[in-house]
Length: 640
Image 1 (cartoon, rainbow, N blue to C red):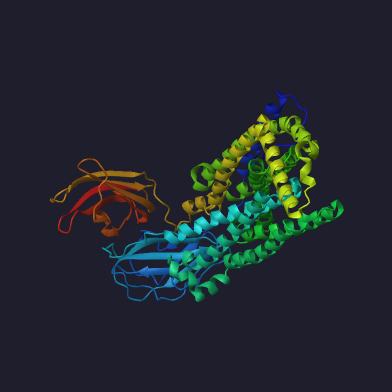
Image 2: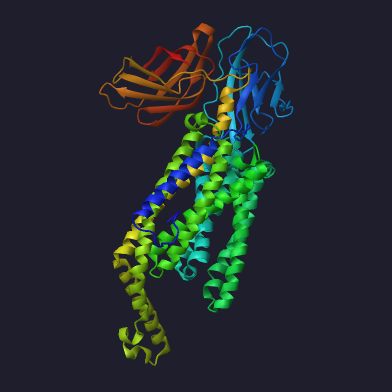
């Protein structure tokens, strides 16, 4: 139903042409304005440079190592660690010094004096100003590169099982917010009779429960999510206290307090308000609930705006209220759509007037979404290259495409709404106007037993509701509307998931800044995916097979590595142990060990595998097929 105004009188030919023209204009406006020039913006901090640079070889040991970032970050005692070739700490093991000047964000750690020659590893981890954990690692050498026993971190900050659960909670929180706010708004604005409908009550209450539970999970997991990655640390009181002192922690606590007020709002909406019969009193209560509910909904939306992308970068004072409006419009649109779907499938009483009111609300929501979305896109992307060449830009294109699909489906819903006005309502009115005496035996009202009379009254009400539902469900216009709204809801679920992914993805503008970097930055060298195929034979029973390796994107910096092992019969083959090591013999770097995790039978994977510099790397693969049968094979590959 999304961007649809109430059905009116344009001809059947002009309506689709007008809708297509409006859609084309909207899409053109979005992509035209989001790519307008602007000053630099930052969000989702990225490493923009280091001294010494990644892969650099210096003649003498530096006194300190400094790292530069694209925006302000929060650091702790172990945020920057420098490890010598044997894996021992080469820094003074103190909290990094803030060396920032003006708009330049820089932190450094002092090194021990008299460091010997060799290859040193710098591992860093921090929290971006938009609440997301960031991490990375690189190497530099003193005198000349050497072998190192240090294994670069294989897991990015915020990853692992804790990261998976935290991300699920993030998705659930957005979904709960949409159902809570959108469902409540649908009842107050579009269908006041829905306050007495049990399915509508369940929808809103489940939205509240989902948002509350997700917020609690995020608050407890915040410490391990940004730190150790261990579930046990969720109940570390010292860690929880440190989370409460941060901006994301304060936002989550504020959300929980506002959800307490939301619980009171729900109790009034489906209690006092639902039972109110006097129209004047109900109108006054509607106004009060609308104001109070609007304040609470705005406050909950602000807990996202104050702690994520909108809170950092250029024009933050404008971006945060714009983000609040964007979230409220999403909730009114998608939450109202979910409510309409529930009403059409679970209740017999909703009529075309409520559907048309939602059509008007949805149209207003889409207008707000278009305006706020254009501003947010301009702020976070800013160029054609960032739009097409970054993950954020590609997700944004997908989001706009999904909105276009949703608008197209909504146009069909609008047509069914117009037909519903002429058919279903007429049959409903006829059913409602039928005298009770025609459908019920006279003996029912004359029953002298009050308890029996009450029981029969409930039965009559159930039969009446069933009859009305049967009449409505038999109407082809109502069935058509239900199908189109169901299609809208399916697209809306995907749209909401993509929107949530955008909130945790590094904005395109920042990613381009980090890739461009400063003169001291180590920009990733151009490359391409590496695909290797190596046969092996451990000499034992069932010891023959083939190792297939993919390294993506196949450039300096962070890479994803996948390994598949096929047996001699071509089927996936599991082995007790699999190890890899990467060596750049021309620079005497490595071997850098990689221990992949098993994903499925015959499939292993490792993320964030660091390639410190471009070159002809030797990849050693050790395969063990039994307690005594093992072989190491190798192959060279150009990376970077």
